[in-house]
Amino acid sequence: MNNNSQSVKSEICWECVYGNDPEIIEYQKKRYDRLYEIFQTHFGKTRVKYFSSPGRTEISGNHTDHNHGKVIAGSVNLDSVAVASKNDSNKVIFYSEQFDDSSEIDLNLSEPVESEQGTTASLIRGIAAGFRKQGYSLGGLNILLSSDVLIGSGLSSSASVEVLIATIFNHFHNADKIPNVEIAIISQYSENNFFGKPCGLMDQIACVTGGIVTIDFKDPGKPLVEKINFDFALTKYSVLVIDTGGSHADLTEEYSGIPTEMKQVAKYFNKEYCRDIDLKTLLKNVGKLRGKIGDRSILRAIHFLNENELVEKQVKALKDNDFDLFLKLVKESGNSSFKYLQNIYSPKNVNDQGISVALALSDMFIKNHGKGACRVHGGGFAGTIQVFLPNDLVEEYREFMSGAFDKNAVKTLSIREKGAVCLG
Image 1 (cartoon, rainbow, N blue to C red):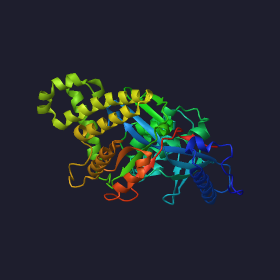
Image 2 (tube, helix red, strand yellow):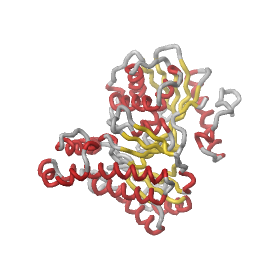
Image 3 (tube, rainbow, N blue to C red):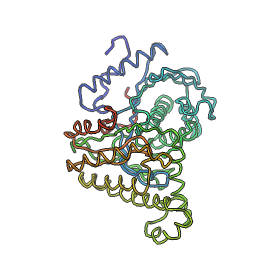
Image 4 (cartoon, one colour):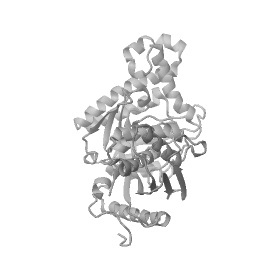
């Protein structure tokens, strides 16, 4: 560690956040020291704190949260990191290592700024507005941010940053007293209303909580969050995400169409959300629904109801330590997304089906080896798929996929037990 910097204290439990690999821990220590040096360049020498917030991977519950459904998610080893200190102004002075840019956000201005939409500045302003709205304390901050969470990877880079910023406000100005769910709700509020992106609450809860969590959104204002006591490392499997190279640009209509169509089905039964209807009643009325609402809406509602049940079965499988059953259910979830939810490619561009190709190749690989499972990851239509494979097959799979995708497309993840945290 650099003796001229106020480095992270030696008593910090690096293993609790980054695992037991000495090379990874050494990399992280050097990373934090580098960031402190950059912080000094922009803000001068001052006493700082270090913060980390993980990305997340959706394990099950594809497109269910917005209709008050159930999900399983896990925080991952890729994270967003900040070096931060208080300042005497009522401003957040922010610098991003990735983009080599800075912003100054006046906390007195709590309305969205159109020119900031889609930027980190908008997230900071939105989180501050959310804190004020809920009666929490605010104050000036200096923040240097860096992130390893891949943008556009389906690992929730935006949620990771939101939760990180909210955790910094919570630590410096609220004595770490704000509950995790409140941190998540404020972060979602910021993304929806200031950043300008519609999203459910799953991403933020997974990032702030850590580990594998199951979330029930029957009452979105008070979601039921349960951390599942399951040591994924003991399975000797890896969680992989494969970047198919597709772009999320111009997909807003596809994403917003899913909850809209599900709610149309619910409305037919005088309900607001699919959570409030049951499969038996839906199936009795398919003929009437086809003429009034359309086939895809029906299929998407069927996906929701099946997926909610699959989440319950997967949670039980993990609690029972039945990993083989869990993988079987992952396959069922993936099939439901492909056949019924239909978020594998955009109907506007049927010749661009990177996710379909990745799933086809992965299916073949898994069948040839008799082990593993795959599914679409995250919002779908473009982006990533998720694969569970034994550790000893990962390199062979990576080589197999390199014929169709970039050699760095396959990312190996691990489940991180700690959520957003102040390291010291």
